[in-house]
Length: 483
Image (cartoon, rainbow, N blue to C red; front, side):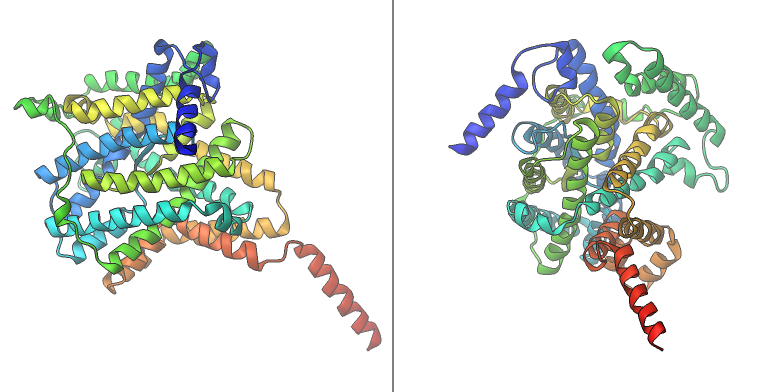
């Protein structure tokens, strides 16, 4: 009964009243004339990132372009919409948007290819997702108790790590995307790289000017305006937009529906399940960081135990459900956290409208195919500020904890070793050649690295390092006088 009461209260709070000013409040409806563009802005910010992990994993398994992959991507869109609604109404009850997690890309590619790739590797991954998601969801029910082991400085470092993890992605998209960057050698791109940079810069400037000169709440739609300007520019530049995906060959290109995966083919093996569960726990750290960033950056308060628990349990349960549709694990999206923290538009109703748009895109492929035509340079041009803002929120959180000698040492080592290690590409080449693919996948995750380092140091370093040093100095002085 308590669950259903909590659910009913959550729904009532989202839909009660209607006021344009509710855009800056967690609860209450917003007129659709405002809610729709704000909801779509959230979708545009995460849409490409939601399907990219699937494309990478399917490419590694050798099943990219198959009916299996198409069905999985449809399921990912559907579950991103359903999962976001679950977070809004039941889970965190915060303006959280979820999508396919990048955290699992490396480990799933390793698991799938070690099983021979293809369909067999894919179903081994799905079995691990189902088991790992359920285990994670159950464990997170008790995070109120074991979460106390995480000291206050650690979530601050994690949010900073999440921001840093987006920096490379934002810069790559600004240059035109990974395909364009790969084509720089040998000049294989359809346009010179400066064309993509000009388009990205135009999108960025349009978003900035809109935010400066637009009035009232509309100024917070700078992302969607910048994308619109960038897209229009691309229409006049040959070979920048690929319209081939918009071709309608049969009825399934117009209307499609999410299909259940063949659960009878799921494979459950101990080692892949253990590794997947470990990475679920890594995504738990990201979830804590994202919920903390929203509460501190947009609501000017700390997240409650209920909000943290709801975020993490819902993420695990949503991932468990998404395995039934052949999709990969879902987690909170930092891109959307940055929108909330930068615009202060925290209204849950607008995020719910965005979730409906994701669900619609899963039924009407023409919608998702159109969004996929948005060039990376347009997305990168409008998102670089937002990507960087997460790192800034992490810096602000670290500053609020204070720059004591202990905290400075924790942050410094987390940055240099935790983040710096991921930039040493030769290390990962060596580990992969040595057959240590799983270790390479874990060390390449800067969020995991920075969390582990900050967590360990937060416990082994004394709280008052200056005081300890002074005590030792006095003892040394006294001993010197005696001699």
